[in-house]
Image 1 (cartoon, rainbow, N blue to C red):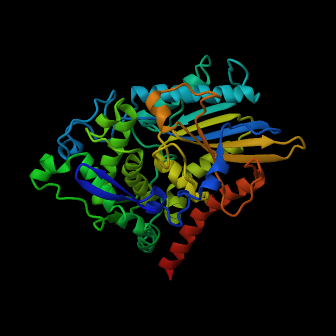
Image 2 (image 1 turned 45 degrees about the horizontal axis):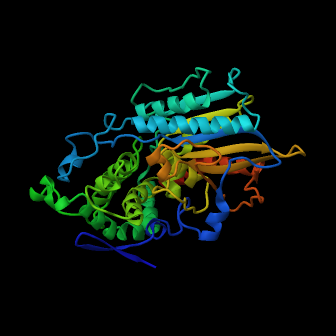
Image 3 (image 1 turned 90 degrees about the vertical axis):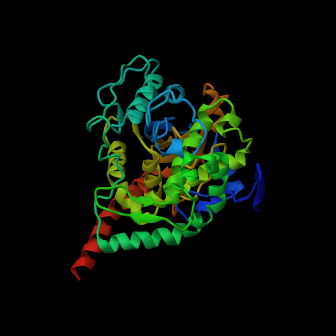
Length: 446
């Protein structure tokens, strides 16, 4: 049922987040309170199983907005944004503290499972920490490493020139054709067209919160309002999928508001003096989530843009002697990988975001007493209150832990899959890229 909220004189209808963006979409949505309750865990451990290996794909932690002072963010609102502790796009002080706490949480878990010794110094090749070459990802990996291996002086690997995108983490098309581009746009409109069309009330909410009608851009006619029907897509080889129009503009504002909400001690200040509810914060964040889904979660997009990272994860899972891997990238990496692996719809509790800031896909290998191998896939993330309070993570205050389900496969009561089934799913996702190229090259040749 839709819920009606008011901010000032603006009356809006808030549709639950999963209705707005996730009809039939892999990797998002509310699959019902019963399934959510079953999937929420309080620990990463599995009783009766021995932990053998862990591979983590992480989003960077809290950063400053991507656009800095003097950008359109400043001219589309008369209000002054939070004074970020870092330059545009870079990890904030809060983000560093939070990521260290997460590293410490993982350290205590790995020690309790016997995978790490106390004050562990990894043997050659046992631990790999690899980040995209952006400041926010390198810094996140450094802070995580400080919590995970506080006395080991572990190296953070990054392989591209600093402040550029490493091809492994860069969610760009590495193949494109005219037919493929047209099919992508058709697929996006089929899956997400209703989600985009339903964002009108979210746009109204954002406009009210930032007081857009008092802004220079509005007064000067540079910005005349949001329009749910003005999206213009672009799909080019060597570039990320992109969209122009209101969805992009609203996403930039949504991103900055959500980051401000995490950083600002006073939620009313975070909303520029408006006293808004948690449901309304979710509606603001939903714009950003729809944007990410539209660009990176369509099946024919995800198997292309996630291809190098899928290969990297599979390689880590099969590297002899590897105990723990930490790969640090972006929300686009998580969204595309989860979609390519055909993860069932999910709805994370106690967070505003579908791919939470600092959130982690944790792929864990386990062995039972008979020697059979299993794999679990979980999302681990700091809940909204934990981000705001920077509270220490431990067994009494665990992060959000949500057990993911793979479409078409049956997990046991512990949320574990047979290891060979999961590895077959990686093979399928990786092979889908080659099949896609073969399909469209055959069309071109016909």
